[in-house]
Length: 154
Image (cartoon, rainbow, N blue to C red; front, top):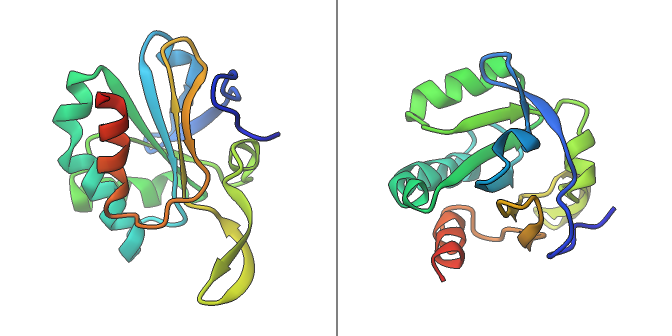
């Protein structure tokens, strides 16, 4: 299933860093930024997470929730959150089922070679559950959160 702007975002329920179940429908009425990243505490993923963190107040003013999703386990997410003081929820998708629904798992180029893995991407889900914006591939992890914020502010 391809993610289409203007269509309903695929529903999901995943486990957060505390072992609690979190569903997309829990945030009905709010804007939700769902960003997919390969691995906790790696250079690009850390830059992206810290940029979301550094812009958290601006996202709060826009009544926007940030959810990060990777295949990492809850314990890994907890360490990542504590190490970098991340103020948002990280979800575990070890089976990559949600990533597949959102086009965030598949073939990608890494260091000039084709490989299968997590495709760094972002989807903004509006208060009505529809996709407002979808970035299929995020080229510059460190700058991306500011692009997301600029889109929401426009």
